Length: 187
Image 1 (spheres, rainbow, N blue to C red):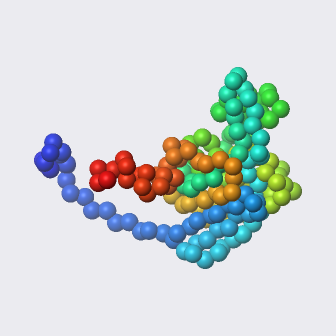
Image 2 (image 1 turned 30 degrees about the horizontal axis):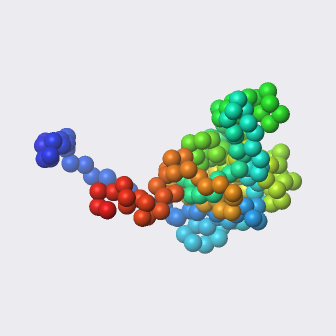
Image 3 (image 1 turned 60 degrees about the vertical axis):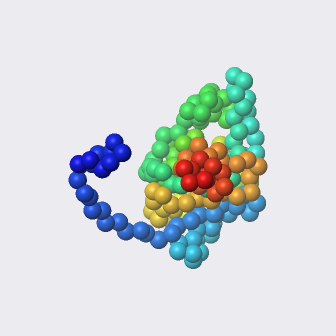
C-alpha cells in the first residue's frame, strides 16, 4: 500500500506493550556505592569498585581504565562472558592484560563496560577502584542485579574524571536537550 512521499507499507499492525517499572542504578565514584531504585523507591544499596584512575600506552594508543560518568543503558546479559583485554588494544601478555570468564555480566556500553560479579575485588568494593573500567559488584548483589535488571534499564555513573562518549552505547541519553535539538528537523 502506498503511504505517500515514496513510502510503502504492507499492512496495518497492532502491537500491545507493557511498560515495566522504572529501574535506575546510580553508581557514585565518591562513595564507591551503587543505589538501585525501582519506581523511585530504594531497593538496594551496596559497595562497588569501578575503573582504576590509571592509563597505559600501548603502541601509541592511550588506554584509560577510568569508568566514564554518564547514563548507560543495559544492552546485553550473559551468565558468563569471556572477556579479553585485547578487544580494546591491551595485549593479554601485559601486566594488566587478561582473558577471563566473567560471571553475571550486564553490558552497558559498546566499548565493553559491564556491571558484573567480581569475587576477586570484594575487599576493594566500597573502598577503591581496581577494575579495567567495569563496575565490580559483590557476588550476591551481582546475582540480584543480573536477575532484576533487563534491557533498557538505566545505570547512571557519577563523579569520575571523564564523560561517557555520546556514541558509546545508547548515546542520546548523554546529549543535552539543546544539543539534541540541533540535529532535529524541528529546531
